Image (tube, rainbow, N blue to C red; front, side):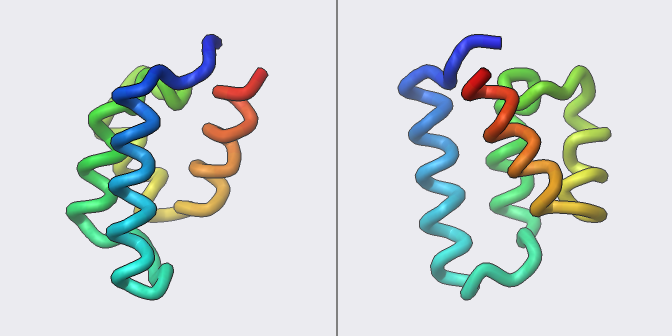
Amino acid sequence: MAALNTDQKAIINTALELLAGNYEKPLDEKTAWLLSTIHAALGYDSQIKFLEDLRDKPFSVLLGALVLTNS
């Protein structure tokens, strides 16, 4: 998979700003939904499955996406 494009990186940066405001607690709905808009670029075929995994195991999902997009 290719690296994230500029728009996708902007989405992730916005999500990071939202997390900083929430003291890195588990992902809030707004942050999860924002990230779900680029679920395919993060290795998921299903937006719903991505949202469920973000809810159940957010750090594993995000770390896995990081590895995948930098392969």
